[in-house]
Length: 188
Image (cartoon, rainbow, N blue to C red; front, side, top):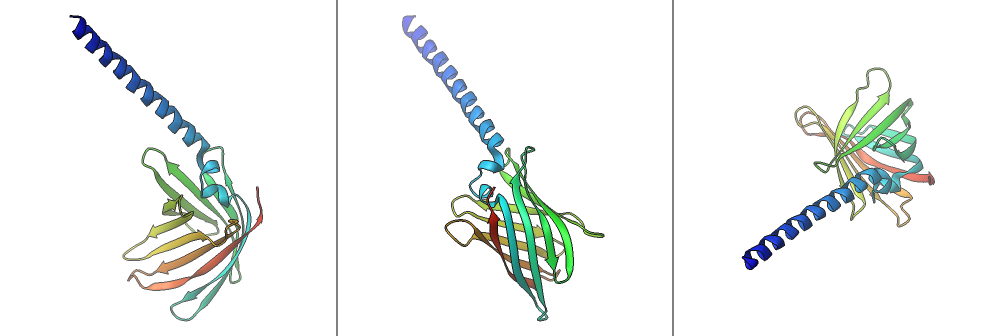
């Protein structure tokens, strides 16, 4: 009888220990979620003011010049926002990138909105490498069309970010591609 009680007692203590560990782990996960983008190894490096310039080449030989000024910041709502102005050739537009993270699935998404007549909000799937400090955004369009943007820091100080951009048409052909270089103007 004594041996049976001892065995049941150990099971009871073990079960409570596992339950306590689950609650502690849950508390750590909730704390991480609240830290969000402000503490994320990649996104915290995007906070601040930036200036960008680059060129995209068209399949037809056409060159598109791009200049941007933007600010990156984590929000109280748990998002990361990059908001700014873009000059594409002579066309100036305000835009907003909004990044979200679903803690339950671990997935990141981004929406891009331009403040202009006829522009629609586009939704991108996002892959972020905390180890390499890189990010890839993909928009899948009709047929084989889409947009891919690959971001990587070009210096140890993380003050220069390079974006490789590729746009594909419905047949999967590359319609525009090139590089945009973002240079930090001011840290937060």
